[in-house]
Length: 307
Image (cartoon, rainbow, N blue to C red; front, side, top):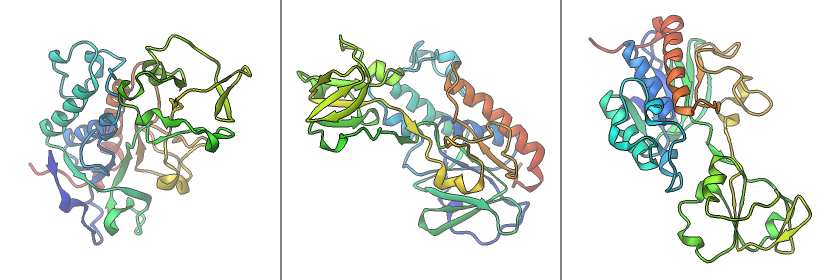
């Protein structure tokens, strides 16, 4: 993995044919796109706000395993090792992403957060406003910040008066801190079901909090010691690209994969769907489509790799 910090230094105007593709986010989607672009001889620079690749995977709960098999979860150009087993554990996913970046010699700059994307001042390409006063101009931009960007905690009536422990599932790691305590898990998606796997009682959904108790949809009340809200995430794209008219009413990109939103040529999105076939498999497909689209539509403006 090439940590090209210099690539994210404040820039002067770049020649339109000497601009990289900037990929925002060094999760599996961003890494896969960067490799696919590199395989076509196009320079891709991955910008990651954390200090490591795969930062969201590092924050997942300890017992997490992929819900798709190892063979269906590998990214293009590098199989997952057989020793990971059929259902790959969280820490092995992180190891795989680190190896993927190293194996493909991806150009990744960590510690850089992109706050806003807008059209380049010369009208050709995109201008990224990033931490440290950086202004980066790219021929194209791929937003790969992920589906699970910002934890969503419902604004339940009375939530502020609840005196027990209330946290989002994003903060949950293991059951150890909850030994001997009554815990209410809200949400029955994959995350909620896995966190609650040892619970023996299923109750109605939470409607509100009142007098230190959780009020359920069926009118009953319970007083758990802790509440873990597995209530999903927001994509968190409004500040980044919301002003460009590329999001729908729910904050989801109106175009995905190899298609660009109308009026935003060279702006691509990956990782904002939740397909039944598995997220990693979809990211691998998106990567090829995006790289193919860039090679067809923006290649004349993208800086090329030497050799």
